[in-house]
Length: 470
Image 1 (cartoon, rainbow, N blue to C red):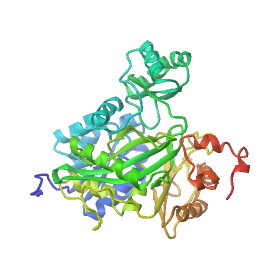
Image 2 (cartoon, rainbow, N blue to C red):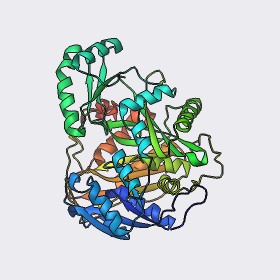
Image 3 (tube, rainbow, N blue to C red):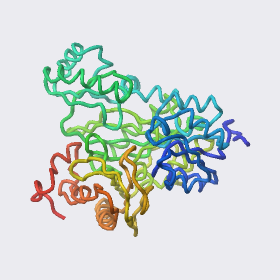
Image 4 (cartoon, helix red, strand yellow):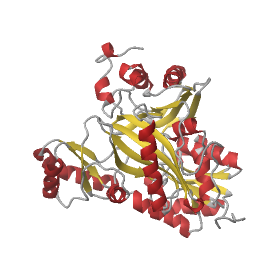
């Protein structure tokens, strides 16, 4: 195995993908273009999945339940050893932000394609990340450290001012959050939130932040190779349209961001990444309040579900660059890019997450896909892992397909997304395509009047027809 002279790291030859579905396929495609072999791992229920078919080899790591398969660290490490893999890509979710797993990979001589365990510990926990952000001069909402008990929570909430949001320190994906508007409500929900955090994350730590009523959710993509002096800030994404604190529609750039705001926050983030020596891809998430102030929430130390919109407006393959950086190679940027500067977006991209779920109740809807026809045409990208005859298991996240469109303007990207949604056929199960069509037809969406409460304003089918125009 050869080594890269500049970094001393081993060049990557074979990648085991510790994930499933569309992100596993996305990694396989990037590896194939880089001339790298791939190993898929799969649960018993995923034996016929596309990522298993398209990888160069595959290893079954356990039964359907995630704890016995995709979260089974000994089984994944054993699969890497058996297959001769020299690197592991965790995708998103599952073990992607698990510092222990990254450290085990390192101890076993496997290159972890992502940040170091030390990076994860610095940025991965919400409370430690807030402390670090404060030290680095990144703006924060008023909030607390980990709360000792409900009495401390009440005292701190009074200082901050109601409403506040109670959060699980180890939470993610919108889970472990409760909006609280009074002392009585806080005393009532605190033990419930603590129990839910323990059950969901094996960590009952809670903290408080000031709650912003109508925020926009803005996140900045970074890609860093500190050994080469590179801290790239690849602009922002808007992820304000959410259900149950989980993103549904993402776009880049945000219509709410000015060039000045983008440049100022980009410079702040680049300095922070340089000071901390962060490696690989990552995303810093912010709330944008009604006055145009950005406040740091958390950092995701992994590739994001919505990374394709950034790829389309920058021309950079984020997954390929992750792999290059992990192997000690210099990332490849557009010729116009100068290291250390913010890369300005070109055009506009949208992403709609197509989930196997009821479009009104959001209840998961697993089952047999009897017919599948993806959209196509100019400016349309489809990232998915489904096919006609595939039985969608009920054991995992409901994401089926990501539809991504690109246009010279936001208006063109919206028109293409409307067309793409209309062309998409997924029969045999329910999906949230009708909800996406309603969102894109909303005058508020078309005008860019977005917030994390967008779906509340949209209402149920029939409730807001007067406010919707095509």
